[in-house]
Image 1 (cartoon, helix red, strand yellow):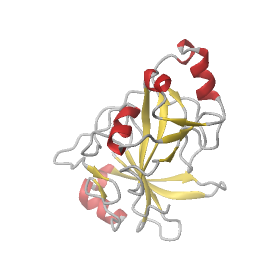
Image 2 (cartoon, rainbow, N blue to C red):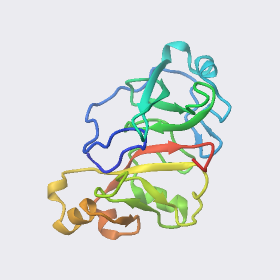
Image 3 (cartoon, rainbow, N blue to C red):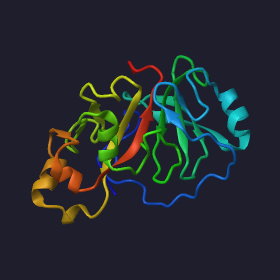
Image 4 (cartoon, one colour):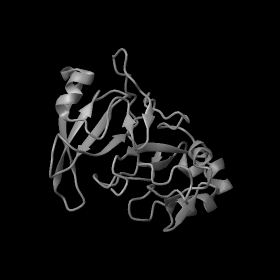
Length: 212
């Protein structure tokens, strides 16, 4: 996978982690995500103490992520080092008690929406759910691969974001497509050449405060 995005909270990478993570060993976990409302059993009011009750303390691990200005922000990993890993990034002003965003970043994660949006799904799945094209940054743009607009579609202002990646051998793509992906421009999910290149959702972001 050639990686076209980086969360605002981390450094830009050029390629995704190729490691194959095992699924989490868990029972009765709710994997359904409703943007703006919940991710599984996690809601806007969930605290780290609640996470230990929901998933069990053995599945909870404290972490941190680098913010925009190099400041580390508290985070919590759920099901760490499995394909189902989920990372909660906390409000710096209220750590472990107020969720800033939730990040799902491994292929094969069981977290999904009712419309089958999940990591690894083709960008066409999001476009269909949105009812409109969506737009994302090329590799040469700040925050490469990040979705920047839902174009007023059904997913607009719901608290869902993501990053796009290419699945396959980048060098085998037509030079025109390579130039698009490497350029400094906004790209559209309607671009037939990009759809044919099998771009996928590499990461998903969930927010409870859509202004963030």
